[in-house]
Image (cartoon, rainbow, N blue to C red; front, side, top):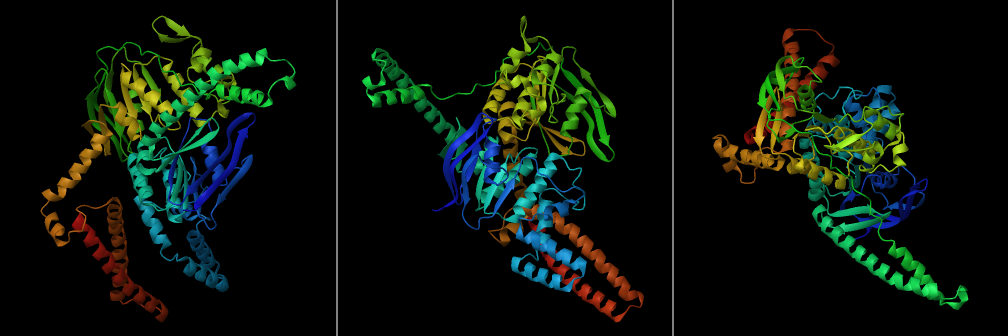
Length: 621
């Protein structure tokens, strides 16, 4: 199969730091490739170069002619002042969106020639139903108020809006940079299903291991400035990577043994180069290069011990909190136990971050109280990131917090040594905080949280911007952590490895305590959804009527059903208004009367059509 993308001799460096050199690989149509590497090795840079957002030092990126490419960056940007609908429609790389925009502008201008040209462009692009489909996709991804402005959207909402634009553009080649960051789990699962169904080609960077496993057919690893492609999902990649590293280390060991013999020969030979066999001299220097071995990056060291925690942790008694009409907690009571590891899940905006701020006293409850044990020492990793002065150097910021950092009782080290455990070399420690990459900021944030030896860790989205290797080390540390842990995370793999039970925040102040990890919870939901139709008498005739009909609504159908209810309400209100006009005896011009009559007929047909679809879906419900 011909490649849809060819990369030849691609090289990129920043100053004297080489990210990758002479990369050569091809991507076939339909491939779904995940890019993995340590932080700072050039994953995002590679994607940006392929997407045409950044230039390489040398080499070529060649797409097959006519390939439509869509790129989702980590932090999407939209024009200030636009509504959600306008921002979703503002996509010049999408021919249909462009046709719709041009047609709207031509109509507004009143220029007949421009309108006629725009009309033909709409016909040619097949864009007449584009706005309806766009509204449907917006609703599917949680945007119910399409006229809301984009200026105050959260990071997760901006990511979802960018996904809407990507889906609507129907690209041949999709490039995603950390697509799951800031998304809630339900949206991640929606995106996962969309990408699995898609026939397009995919290249993405993500730290979400379940996402990689379920979506990708190949893994591309950037390591030692080179690229290695493995057939299969992430689990297969881990096995192949271990085999590759083992083979490389064996080759290095052999080269070093041979080098010792060749070094002795070189030392015995005359100083004049003419007196030696040139090929053997050349071979010696090649062997010396091979014997240096594979440059292995260090891992962060999370060996700080938590301080002692007493038997009394803390207790919530009748805690209530609301913001206007939005209820976060409603008479919440709970006793936390020693060693408890809790995960908190729920859709974006339900109040997860507010909950943990209430717990720590950062936000005051409206009523009720928290009874905190005397020995509890919180360590809070906030998704808002560092609160340091960006114009300070890394070492100065940490030294201001503590001159000596206690690892365990009676053992302390200096800030410089401590930062090296988090992969900040002496040179890196002199960097100003505003120059740090996303992964470096996360490591520094984690370092400052753990330096106080907390015995109650609260982690709000800790997996954003951390590479997979660092995540594995953090998971191992948390599993052995002797204190209490509360984790808010969209990373399902991370939750499965850490937590003993879940708080499921359902909105309206309702919190359900589920005994088990996230996969257990998903399995429980699926069992419930399968058993419900059997328990509902109304569902049995629908099941007998057609064997191919699903027993329950899909996610897409559920959103369509909700949208239909709103549309029918609006259409019936318009129809009632016209009926009142016709029965009122009001006078109107012939043109106005004919227009209202025509609209009345259209409304009746439209209502009949949508009511029929509503009935079909209501049977599934």
